[in-house]
View 1: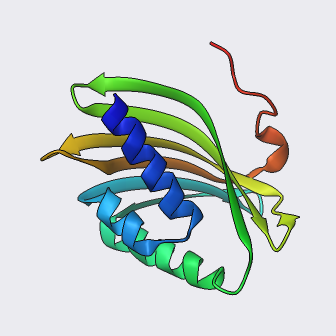
View 2: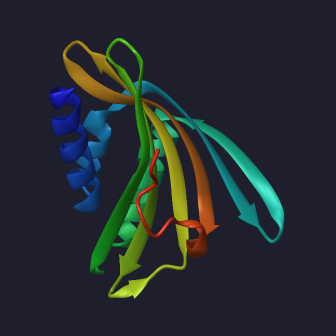
Amino acid sequence: MKEFDTFLEEYITGWRNCSLEVIELSTWKDFQAREVREIDGEFLVQDYGYAESIKGWKKAFEAFQDKEVKWDFHEVNRMPLRRGEMLISFWVTLELDGIKVQSAHFFTDTFKQMNGDWKLIRSYIEASVPISSVPKEPIQS
């Protein structure tokens, strides 16, 4: 799966560099996502597709434009689902202008190889989870 490793490295580098172009090119046009977020003790579940996802990334990257941004990725699990399809679970934390944001996001993303290119096709996100939930060490299987 060397091709996938190369793709994933480029995808994460694009994310770290707040590159909307990399996110757009890496995401399938029929992408589907579900995001769960707790707000004031209530859970908000939101389903969205490609257009809403790109709009959200654009808004986030624009908000970080004048800040020093450091994304930290902590991979938890990786497994092939089908031929040319990979599922990865990972935590993402964020540091803005040297201050660690006190919440994290947990992603379970499915990537599929299509016409020789890898694309993000599905995503499940647990958003704004307390930073204390992120494992300090890699999880051993």
